[in-house]
Length: 322
Image (cartoon, rainbow, N blue to C red):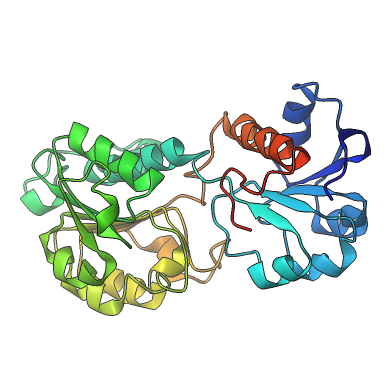
């Protein structure tokens, strides 16, 4: 039985997001508190009927969360949650899928533009007070997107929005998804995940936007990197482990493709000894693609809808995972 509103306690667990402030602005009258560290979360998780969390969640918390009935994830990624353990504890789980789809897609196209227009280099030159001269070598000059082909791996909310942006820049978009029968979602053509290596040679830009699952782990393999055109660009706004990072490093060390733009890496933060940090043909942002000023409010919209459904005893929730 889900607790009544007067008996419900919500815990917001995030190191930076202003979840509690934005929730209290809704004036729901529900009791809520916020924790900023894992240690504090571990101490207080037992007070909560509902937890709103993302990266701070560890499945070791389940035995301490005696009252927990529902987890509203702050993120769309679900790999941190054990579905088996949560099911056994009778804890419902919903994702925040879609809350930052526009932001991630816009970040992906920003990465593409930054690399194509050599903006990271321009920023570095600005700090050096260096006015770069014109470049005679065509392979090293700034590029434009019109007429190029972008391969989008994962045609959900993010991938479909990225496809729309790519086409707005005059690119052809090839989409890959688990079930091509679900439609093109804005791509010019759609294929299954098994066609990745076959399609990579056709692409000027290979962009990962899919979820991390057992099926997509290592999907961008050494064979896929080897199949890319030397003039092409690799972009990852999905999860670091969707790509074989060792193969990516070998690819970039050997200058086998033109550039890589990464918002995610296999280990985060990226270890200080990773060669990716200092490679001139790699551009890195620190998993900020999903950051947006509207993030908290977008998550709270889903949370409030799901609390209403749970209070009514509904079995179907928005973005339901469990």
